[in-house]
Image 1 (tube, rainbow, N blue to C red):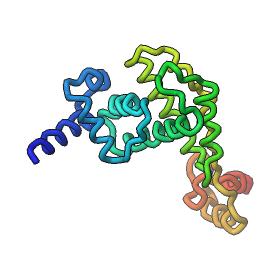
Image 2: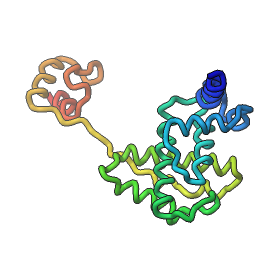
Image 3: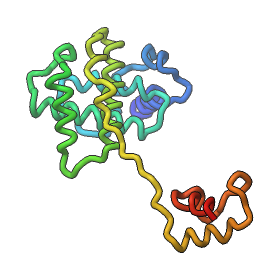
Image 4: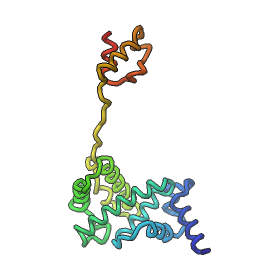
Length: 203
């Protein structure tokens, strides 16, 4: 029991301490096996030879972040490693990774996921993988990893616009805004909704 408490305290200080900077986390004296052990307890290991590398990169990137950030990074690299296991089982070392077919293939596989993943999820995973590869490029001294993903690989989320006002709401806006100028007052009914501003300005 005493050993468990010591190990748990070491994991928490390594992964989640808000006082640790990113550089400090890279050179932390805490045993890296503790953070790796924490990851293994949360999820069954993939038994991929690159999993420990991505676990350590995740620990470095999320040393002062929330549990949700840790989960997001883990979900990303586990998805990537599952893809490699299924489609490129000969990839066993980081220097073997290539943009095409490994990273581009994973991006395409993610887009064809069933049920479909949202654009925000796809974008988050692309950004997370880029940051993980950047961290590994620095820590493992493999510069080529920094060029496996580009900005164009991140899906652009659809912009959402508010729905136009209904005629009854426009009439309400016109009534409430009577006598007020657009430069001195704003109608509380429409709050700048498209359709209202032009209608009230025209009255």
